[in-house]
Structures are given as structure tokens and as C-alpha cells.
Amino acid sequence: MDDALPIWWERGADPAGGFCDRLDQSGAPSAPASRLRVQARQTHVYALAARMGWSAAAEAASRHGLAAVRAARGDDGLYRLGGYPVAHDGMGLVYDQAFVLLALASYRAAFGGGLEAEAAALARRLEAFADPAGGYGETPGLAAPLFANPNMHLFEAFQAWSRASDDPLWPALADAEARLCLERLVAPGSGALHEVYDAGWRTPADAVCWPGHLYEWGFLLLDWPGADGASRAAALRLIDVAERHGVDQKRGVAIFALDGALAPLDRGARLWAQTERARACARAAGSTGDATLWDAAAQAAEALEGFLQVPTPGLWRDWMDETGAYRDEPAPASSLYHIVGAIAELTARAAGPA
Image 1 (tube, rainbow, N blue to C red):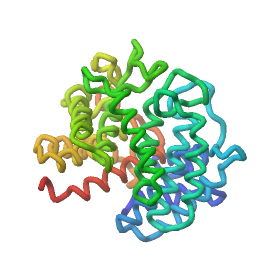
Image 2: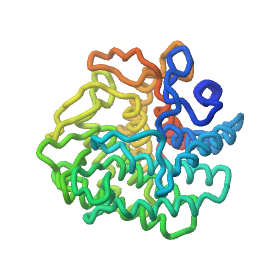
Image 3: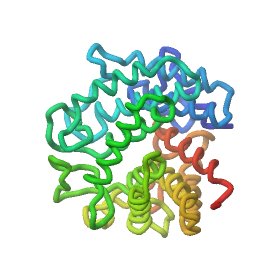
Image 4: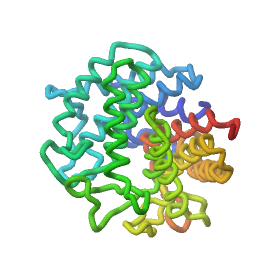
């Protein structure tokens, strides 16, 4: 509230529209407003900040981002800012639509506004991307590859709309994504889930797992209003798998990637994975009273502090290599979404286990 929210509004907002993608370590813009997900995430961040008590310019900042989001709506009902790469990586068109839905829900929840019809129209437009086996693919009619990541963020957005609206559309969509995760994505043997799947959501031979996403899925399942005993157990198991296989205890960080056998594949660490570990472990600790999960949340928060130790308060480093050295590069705006989400959960759980 003292540093990050002000600097990303005062220096990160482009007067011509939208938020810049990165600030260099002096706080100067180093990349233009070029990614739709950044506009949507900053809309969400400042809406959430208002609800957390930061009133300085939260509505103006969120409205600034929302204007850029809504200006990106095309004649086909989808939102685009710039082009999308031909290669399928799970962070393309559908991924961005998920964040558009989250932005619309968050702005409505914080400030009101008639955004529900627009969101429902986008949800209907996404039906063209639905996969017969459940969830959504990146391209209509493309059976493979299928990606967990955009479905995770659609799950998040559908839950946000379930809280912001009385329309039964949103809980039904959230429930469908939860079923996809529990019935198709989570491997019964290991309890983990992977990033990329073959047709029909079959696990490929060269499966890759990101521990940060195990935490994120775990948190979203615990946050899901439709959760029952089985889904909560699956969520806690996802978090446990990440804790057992995805944390380098020497550095105290969640690492970037595991292979299909859950062995380390990339021992580097990204800021966002530390925030998702803190958030998920705090929620799981609050749910179970397990003191070891509180310790894990505290370790993740401490790791996050390391990424925030930069010359200009309110900025951060994004990558740590396996030796513990941080990359010297501009701070990506997209990380603020993860940081604020973690702070919101840690604040809510600060009193400790019940």
C-alpha cells in the first residue's frame, strides 16, 4: 500500500491508455501497454486493493485498466491486444479471456457497474472452445495439445463471478472446471496434475508439472463453494505434493518445474510460485490447523521478501537461479496480481489457526 500500489499507478499507467508491461529497476516504464492480461490483472489488483482498504486512487486505477480491457473487445466478441503467437503454450487467447472475466467480476464487486451482460456474452462466446471431454482448448476444434493453465484461470474467474452475481450460470461453469480438475487432470496415483495433456486430457509421456500451479489449483479448490470432503482432500494432496517435491529447502523456495515422475526439471524459482505457496499453505493451514502448513506459508512469505529487495521500493525481481542469484531485469507488472492475492489471504489468516 505504501510503495507498490502507488508506483504502478503513478508510473505504470500510460496516459494514452492501459498499464505498461514492465518498469525498470529505477521505476521507469520499459515496455508499453502490450499485453491484455496485464490490463485485466491490474484492473483486478486495484479493485481488490480498494476492498482491502487502499482508497487513495484504487477506483481510478481500476477504471483505467478496465477501459483498456473493454477497448480490446473485437467484433467476434473476444478480447485481443496485439497478436498471439502461433505456438500453443497455454497462455494465449483463452488464457487472456479468463483474465478479462476476472477483471469484469472484480470491478463489479468493488465498484458496481453493469458488466454482467458483457461477461455472460464472453462466457457464451467461449463455448466454441469447449473440449468434448471437458474444459476448454486453445483453438476451436483442436483436440490437442490441451492446457491446464487457462482452465485454472477460468475456474478462478467463474468463482469470482459466482460471488459477484446471483446468476446460476457462474456456479455451473465453476463446478464444471472443478470436475475437470478432479476427474481428468489430477493423476490418481501421484495426486499431481500437469501442464499439457494429449487429446481427451490424457497425460503425455513427457509430462511437466509446475509446483506453483499445484499450489494455485489447491487454493482454488479449497476456495470453491461446491467443495466437499473428496475435493478438499484432493486440494490438500496437491499442496502436499508441491511441498514434498517442489520446494528446495536449502533456499526455502518453490522451484519452477518437475518432470512427470516429480523429479526436479528446472530448479530456478519465480516470484509468483512463492506467492501461490504462501496463499495455498495459509488457506490449508486455516482449514486443517496443521502447524507445518503455517510454517510453510511463513517460509514462502520470507522467500517472497527476497524477491522484493530491490533499489526502488514497490518493484521486484522475477527469477532466481538455482544458485540463489536473482536475474537483473525489469519488474513485470503481471506479478502484482500474485503479490496482492497472497497478501489478501495472509491478512485474512493472520490470526492463525482456529
